[in-house]
Length: 505
Image 1 (tube, rainbow, N blue to C red):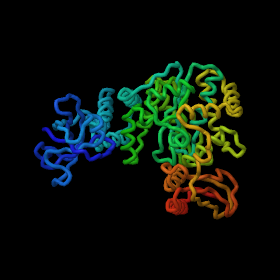
Image 2: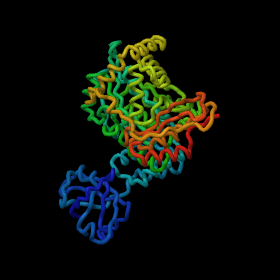
Image 3: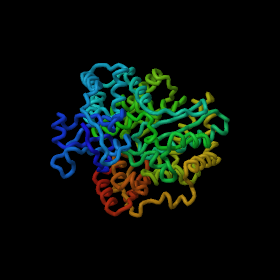
Image 4: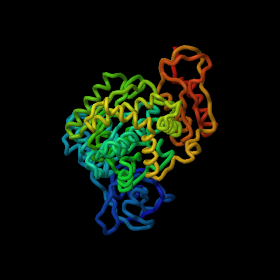
């Protein structure tokens, strides 16, 4: 059937087609079913789920409204004639049913599902069933390896000139854990010092449930959104980069699946493993450090769970020929003092500049990871690499390298106080009794910081004045909430008093 395009400037995040209900009835189409869409006389087509509208206030019977994703992909103009036809349900839906029944999937079946996710051939409901099936039935090592490889094959890959490509990833769940900028700066400087034929192109994510992601934090002082060509140029200048990975098309199925996971509040372990490892394969990493934090409030509740996940990472890495080192670190409390984009970059700069009141826990963790990673890459003992990494940090070489990376990405550390200003409204949360600080909830602090405006309001968040096992006096400030508006501050304060995230005994 031929229809005229009506531009509604609809940004849906995925292809969507809206038909008049009588047009849909004529084609025997129902809500959620699919249509193939192509420019009249052309071969390239897109499959999209159908939504309907009645009357003729929005659409006439000979019109179709398309999301901007389709308009852009097919280079369509308003009133242009396009051709649509019903699309059959993809075979991958049968494979999703198979997984729901608890059966094992082959590489071909998993690749079919992942490919259809990337090409928007599956509806949100079908992707949700896939996520649910993986959550309920799990996946064996071969299935996770197949999903990892499928995610890589259906996206872009980046190749760098140097033979050694270094990467790191923390599995998350710990607020303020901004080790990445520090580790990247130290390792990139060590590459210069030791004349290694290596690079460390670090792609990071934005916040999903936390107060800020690494990309959000770095964006306070420089750009993070680049093309693959731009990233190669940045890495060529500095041996490293600190960029957002969301726009690069690396393992794009992962991003689409995560959107559904967020709606369902599900985080299947198999998806976590495939998500992390596929991104590392996509940049052709040769040496990858995976940091798993464990403790009350972290993703892994205890060391036993962390060891189990470590074993899974190692087994799957063998199957996909990826060289990894897995470390286990404490996640019982936030790392550093700041929670929120500007607050966290202040912590990072404080460590790089070796200020007297810098967060020592963030410094020590970053040095630990950098030392492990450098030893992993070079084969030197950890005793030797510890001397190198600490020397690079203390001497200011890591700060200089960080500044070089920021400049290469179009930013500057000049006038830094104005760039990382804190919200003009603040509220101290004080202790109601004296004792010892026994517990800090990462999850509740993240919730409070997000209610205060993080990560959208960069100056909002939380500054922690106290940490685990500190002696606390009555009426002493435990943490300070910052916000850009009085309303957000009051809301965050109300929740802070309700879910009080710090326990004193």
